[in-house]
Length: 61
Picture 1 (tube, rainbow, N blue to C red):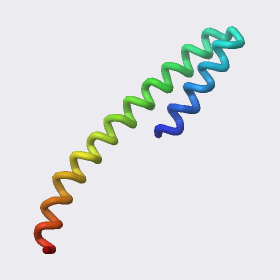
Picture 2: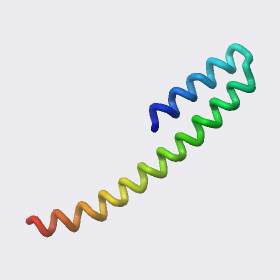
Picture 3: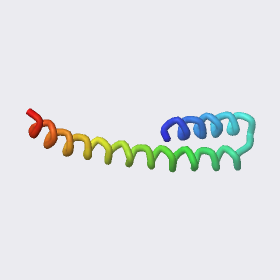
Picture 4: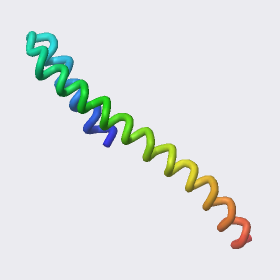
């Protein structure tokens, strides 16, 4: 997901350099949405890993 956000960001920069403002705005919008989705999934995974990891580890020891 983060890789897709970076790709769209690079496309937006290249399009902006060549003057394709519509394409640049579209690619930047997609990159922003993909980054936010990645950030939310990363935070959820972190919380689940911290909460779930401690309980299971204590039972095994």
